[in-house]
Amino acid sequence: MRDRHLVVLSGAGISAESGLGTFRGSGGLWEGVSVKEVATPEAWERDPAKVLRFYNERRRDIRNAEPNEAHLALQQLEDVFKVTIITQNIDDLHERAGSSNVVHLHGEIMKARSSVDEALLFPRESDLVLGEKCPNGSQLRPHVVWFGEAVPMMDKAIAVAKTADFFIVVGTSLEVYPAASLVDYVPWESNKFLVDPQPSGLADESFHVVEATAAEGVPKIVTQLRALMA
Image (spheres, rainbow, N blue to C red):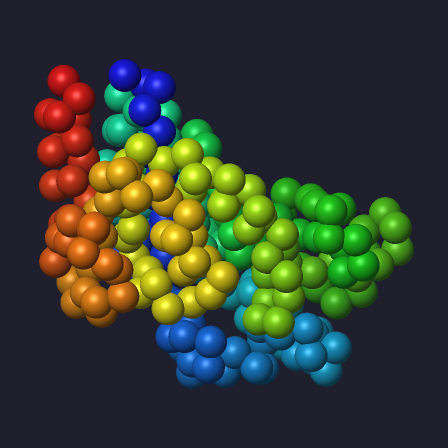
């Protein structure tokens, strides 16, 4: 039954249970730091050293974090489904849990990119510093999509959502666009699940709602789906 396609849309809530902080909405704070200070093209132009310091700290936090029960449970579905995870998160916890097909909408903190050519990427685990340049001579920056920038993986994510037989939303409020619009592309006949300890009501009645945290709710859904496909 691995021809059945299960698609997951994951957000910050799934990584929060691994101890990783997050911005709270487009006008929010991350550990007391404003979005406008560190996560916009204007912030990069104004104070690139501050932006690099902020993301260096995030990279260190992510290296020290571990996948939780939700990440691990999603990986277990790969022996019964074709699984694609679309994540809004910049961490690599899905990959470290063993998931083999992950689409990062907002970039990957464990990569650096040219500040001029967004297609020029480099694996990166250590800190980035001001004055460190890539082969084309441009300053290296985090491979992260900042507020106000285009989301280059959105078209791929839409194409994936359109093929979902099963669709799980976890760790996201469905309030951040364009990622939240992906639910509109999921076929109406698909089996859809929402894992949220405090559902906002933004998901329509076609969703099976599991009122639980990611680490609690995802393993329950995985158990149900594995039994369904047995």
